[in-house]
Length: 275
Ligand code: NAI
Image 1 (cartoon, rainbow, N blue to C red):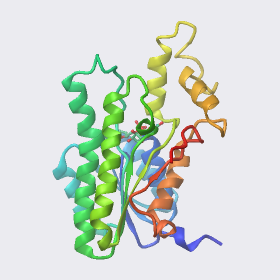
Image 2 (cartoon, rainbow, N blue to C red; image 1 turned 180 degrees about the horizontal axis):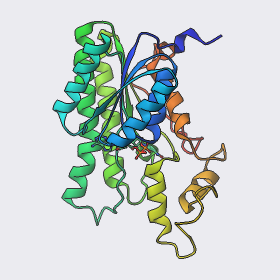
Image 3 (cartoon, protein in one colour; image 1 turned 45 degrees about the vertical axis):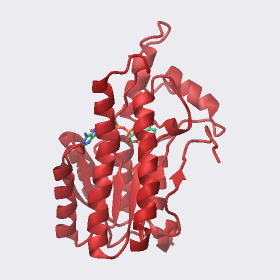
Image 4 (tube, rainbow, N blue to C red; image 1 turned 90 degrees about the vertical axis):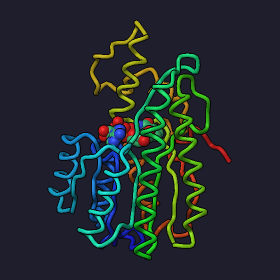
């Protein structure tokens, strides 16, 4: 028998980054759990694939092509979710970009671009969702996507790590401000997850290694130097899949986590074990 606390029937979720990787897996899983899912992303083709998969499995999904750096577009998606499904119960801010440059290489344009998507885009999503949830008076769950980068000083990840650290601060601050409205706010800080984002990063890294063939068979996994390092570093002996993180999102979205707010969940295979 399914566990009732994980049942999202009658709830509405908005998921950004839903055209690919973790966001797509989360949108699909939330729909499987019964939620009506509003899928937002700037990649229209990927969005269509996600909503078609949800619909084909009997779920309810609607596509919102948008850029999370545009507050008005996010506000319109929140309004449409409330108008079509009567409420917004779950907001999962998953859209993000990876950027790699050393501290000495980093320029203003890099910093502005990464902060705009990975921090401001999340801030806008949190603000618009919290306003709608406060107005409807029925509580809700807001989820943000941080990263294992918050726990370390990985070379090249200044902009990315700084934006994710800011997301954690946003998560804790908002949690302390909206708890009295029964709105919970939590972050997920995944370890290395196999998605188009990390595939791209691996290929760039491998292209610096003459012993590697970045065009090699992607089925021959672990397929990159970074993945191999992450696999060896993880007590669980593997890197993650998008579904690993989707389950963390489902937990935080559902009543199973009804006493959890302002927390960072770290599905990372055990790579980092901070207090
Ligand atoms: P992905 O590249 O597969 O998916 C990211 C999605 O965000 C894409 O569909 C992209 O179109 C969308 N997006 C990017 N900028 C956007 C914008 N301005 N407006 C609207 N949509 C936009 O990447 P992945 O791996 O699924 O990452 C999802 C989130 O998880 C990101 O926030 C990432 O930082 C985070 N994360 C990923 C990890 C990994 O190992 N893959 C580890 C830790 C965190």
